[in-house]
Image (cartoon, rainbow over all chains, first blue to last red; front, side, top):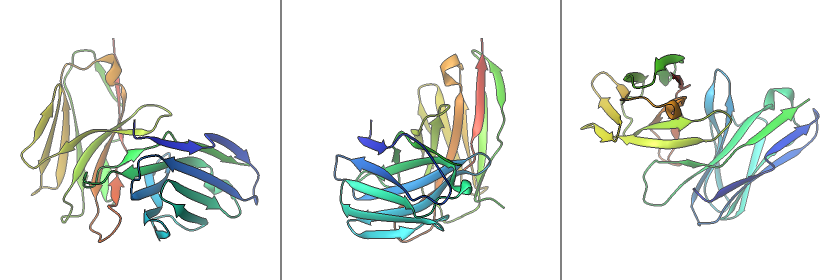
Length: 113
Length: 112
């Protein structure tokens, strides 16, 4: 158990609405990541963070923004959700001293109608 | 060409069988390699890291061939509970973020 929670776990929303997903960790990990997983594409990195207020873009960042105002919380926002953003979203962390290993939260299943 | 390529399967094997998966990667500068396991509708979980000398964890053996840029995972004495998707994962060549690149996964189904 990596001590990561994600909320909500399931969400259905309509095209054009804003959506914020939350990743919460309890062990002061510095590195946090947001991925999306889609059939045929595997896991793709959206954004990552290497500390409070330090974030950067990943492979598929268009249409997404992130914020990290506290070590424990990493928020992913879809400013105006589109049907192409229907996906499963996973948050991950890298514990200090464990190289490149990442540990994942339980995921959020998002459907945009 | 994808950065990390895997045969999607499915591999259908009987209980007790030995099964092997291969994975190829394109970035010759990659330094860290992993196998993750993902059950249906669950998060990926780290199965094992892959070291240059090869490494074994119970029924699972991972090997790395840097010259040919491929990684393998061998599962001996397959159990029904081994049924899952196995993800090959490689670190990218970047200066920040400990970024990983994931293969699309190989699905394994172990039958009674």
